[in-house]
Image (cartoon, rainbow, N blue to C red):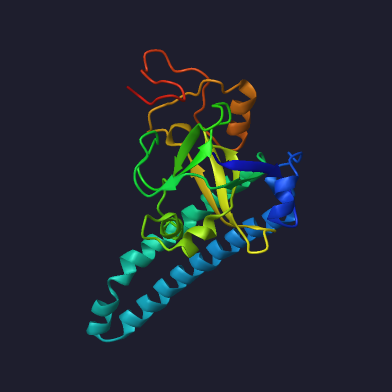
Length: 254
């Protein structure tokens, strides 16, 4: 069973494991705000980098020989795609901010995770299993990396039987802020244990995507639902819609 501890701003992981009384939102920690700001800065740099390169290469191809245009042509659709991805990245960064303002950090050790599809996951892909807030000991809720952008770094470290232990060790411990029934932010720890790094937004499609089948969770009280809504969840309910065939946390759509 994975172990965890709640805390706000600590000097090292060892100390965090001893302090279990902190319940302040993760955003209250200066280290968290610095990590979020770094994510924003990186996204801005990448946006201007891809857009600037697109404009520069377009100018070169327009004033150069025909062969230069054909050599550079594959970049233009891909560069435009990356610009769109970076623009969408600002929405992800905003989602991360909303979660961090609502939920405290938890540190987890030895969480189950895998690159194969989890039978209880709402979406296919790599996943991490987080403890169910109301499910009792040993009950986990898988959260998948629904969006593939920036997921390759996690894919390499979640890995499989042949993945080097040194890579897997970079995911120990994991920081998590959120409610795995709805949405959250996962991060890895800096070497000194003071700072969460590589903030990544995770969500359950049933709580965030209007096209996904709705799902409800037994044991989710109104305070849980309201908190999830403030953090950005769009579709949360305490009981299954009539005639939907949707079960609670013990099953999916039938």
